Length: 220
Image 1 (cartoon, rainbow, N blue to C red):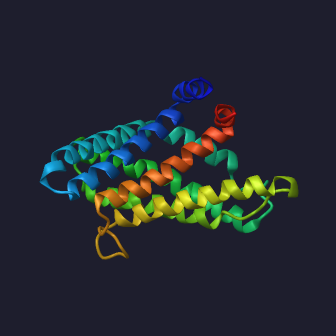
Image 2: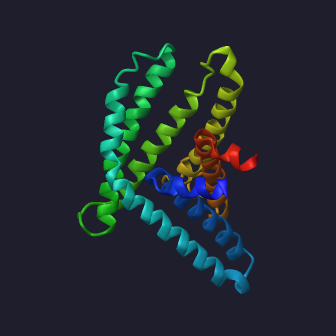
């Protein structure tokens, strides 16, 4: 019952719903991709799951139209990271915030181009937004350095390890979505994209649950 109450509470927030949508989208892509590759007998069900995944991803894209303000407030509050003791982490974080801030308007333009609202090349803007997302992930990986007091080192390392694995999985997908010819761009089958995204999403859900405390209560 505690887990159900915690889930209901999480789904009342935008971030909680976004995590669920993301997880469901990638899980659908994972299962759908596997079914499609198993032959004609299961290809129809697989194609339907891939369609579900596409619709859920589209829903998240539309909801992100409203993320610019929150990102701007966070970027402004962090500023140049004066409270951060580690100079490398400070510089990387500032660059990461800049990449995140630029990501949103680029994705909005790409979405508007796909929807025929703007007459621009959608593909270019999707590539640019994906590149900014990949850059943000890469900077996030670089910034994962132990910075905690001794009493909190173990918990901090566990959290940073999960963040690192999540960012690595997302970065692999980000490279895949870049134009063919760059590293492994365009080479992943749908199921592999779904697998990496599912891993990243579940790690994010677990971290959020642990931070809120209801995961521990549900297990007790």
